[in-house]
Image (cartoon, rainbow, N blue to C red; front, side, top):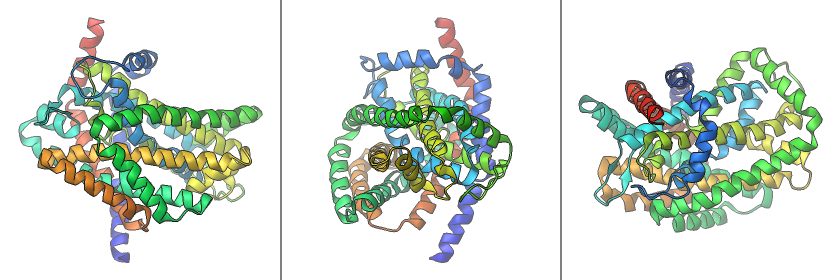
Length: 445
């Protein structure tokens, strides 16, 4: 078992090494320049489109608003709380700058993914709209590239059980056990039942729950963080100065913080930024393909807001609380660091904010990733696999909640990284289509 763990660790280091991080960031830069900074210029227009997208009479399964909320339900998770804290703990405050940079260029990646997802989507034999990297590889690249589409679907169907299911269930059980001493078995039962009520209803029910729960939880978390930031407003200039200075120079050892080189800030900032917003992994376009729209560019603009909301807004709130509270130099890591920061800044209720945020974020991630994994499995095996996959998904939740997941986490980490490779190849090869559709949209306008 130890040997398997060592091998998986080595593979994970290779998959998520400098080459992969450079590809993910580099393709975002390439698309941003190719689109002539379209994603920067259209943020406010995209927000208008999102508001209008609450209703739609176009062809599709869910509204454009619900599509984004479904994507966000899978994206906003432990990465926004534990992931940000890990980036700062290992890379110093400068890691936050590199998270921002990753998100800004990642908006173009997420935009491109959704544009292609809508452009090349299909309807399955049950009349549902299906799409994502496997479909835009098959229908956009065609012929000799079908193996690449199958590879993405295979990695996605199995990676979902780790990153989107068992790891999230384990986080919920651990958080509730630590704060309320609730046995993991009870957490597993309740979490499985709640998930079953939503997941067995398919994409319509997942979208309805996501459209209700995601805005509430995101706004509540941001408001709590903003309250802390407002009560420590004198430290805001110092916090931003520390972030920018640490991004380009080594962070000295302070308190329990061991110090970090510039490369560590870049590495952990980029890695955790991508882990949080998933730009380039190819997961979010699976949800956007189901949107009621006949305009790929408009859905792409709505999709890019997912990266903006996830990293620029929510991750920044977590980071500022950690830095302004001084907890970043305590030597703590992960969710424990976030909890310490909120508890220090908001005595009495701060730790509850983190735990409830973690629980709800993780629950919605389980819902969103169930849909991603199901669509990947359907691509490989047809619609007959849908109900067995859903039942297997529900069975995995209690296993994750009550088990030690070192191997599961490592295996999922590897498969999650492998998902990105087919998707990134497709984004580069199909970039002329993305640029052409965007240019045509702007000319029409």
